[in-house]
Length: 323
Image (cartoon, rainbow, N blue to C red; front, side):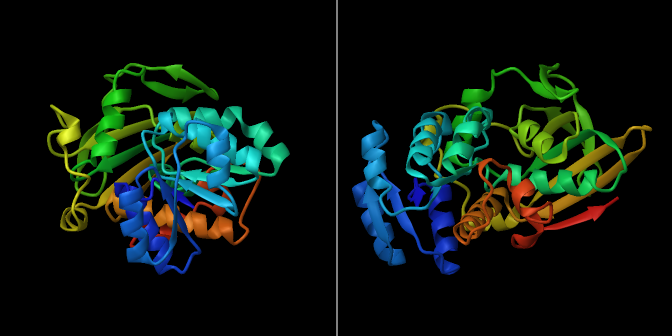
């Protein structure tokens, strides 16, 4: 089941899942939008809200894997994760918000006891950066620090912009000696994504949780470089649903990682891929397909941990090179 299937990312994920032949049920709150989209894809749909667990549980009848594409996830992840655990359903989402990952950490033991997997970030930067970080960490004998940066090209979707603005005042975090600590928000650092070094600013990404869990490296810092004018201004509700197909084709994403070993030596690697929204939808659909086929580990899991650090390179035109 894809919940939020008629949203910007949900539609693309549903299209990729259908193309791959994955058995699929669409779900969400809008009868009109779901009816039309389900007819286009030739699949079943269900309409239900998230106000109470009984309603969600009824909507989940016969479902074994859920992909939540309904953001902002601070409004949906709690109800859907907890109801998934109660109903024995494996949970995935496309969240880029730290709260979803902290929630999954807190529910880890409960999910394990129920035989359920929780995988926030089955697509998106967590799958992308997790793969790159795992690749980089494997290049050195005793990795102690990972600095990783995402190059965001092109426009943001309306949902991403709203989520980013809701989280923009949240403290900037890094992982130091295994603990999340507050760091200066003005710690600009240069990364080379393939066309010369550019300024990147520190940002609190959920990869601070997932990279640490997957690699065991105690120090992790996350950065981002936004092209254009940065975050949109004004009334974000007036923004278009998301970048058009032509805009996505014209704006590829990159990422760069620096892994430092115990002796201070640094290994550099770089990832190049399709536009981030395209990658997110494809990776989430593929993660759902693999989980449905039985690739499961109970409790809170990161995609690079479960599927391996080569996961991102199985998605579309994605490459990792060592510098």
